[in-house]
Image (cartoon, rainbow, N blue to C red; front, side, top):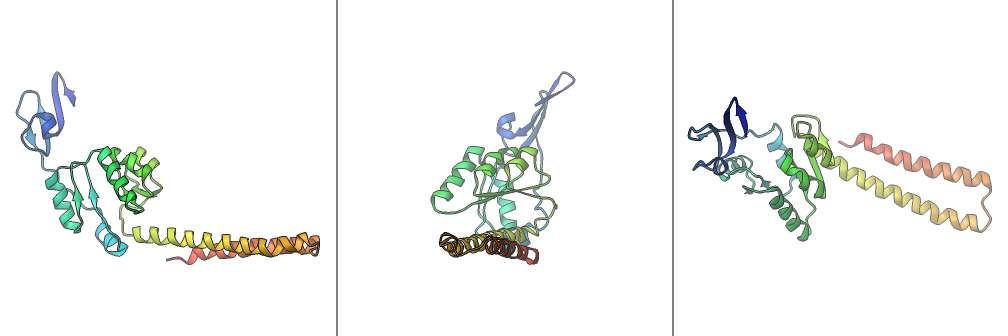
Length: 211
């Protein structure tokens, strides 16, 4: 709501303005609310990303049912419309209780809480600052085409980290008994430590070839 001179201007959903339609409306002064058609546009790369992810996806939006249904039909995914921030959190909790690890993608102020609460979250660079701060990953490109690559890199990072922990555990399992037995000299200990560190670093360098 704002003022144009002394005239009150309202822009929002129909029920809030007093219109019969549930969609976006504009009201200027005492004139009847005027419905506004704001078509939803799918971001570049979203369709190919959903197909490549091969994961169950759904839309949870605060938009009215009709635009949400149109968008969901374009992407062939289920949807929940008219969702408040609390509704989104409740849906996240419902999925988490079912054993799902939820990846949330959002850009609005109403998405901030669920972005922070999700197992993992992504926001585009055009999102509000609060949403970007709440997200784990910020996509700098306008296109979401590389979203499957982001998840592939995340999985590869987790896998390599587990391998590095295993290497460190194996090193300690061998080196500590030798050190306690008094067999290792300072030079041997220094060489073993260097070899262990180099092994972990070289294994981590494999991330450079993840595609």
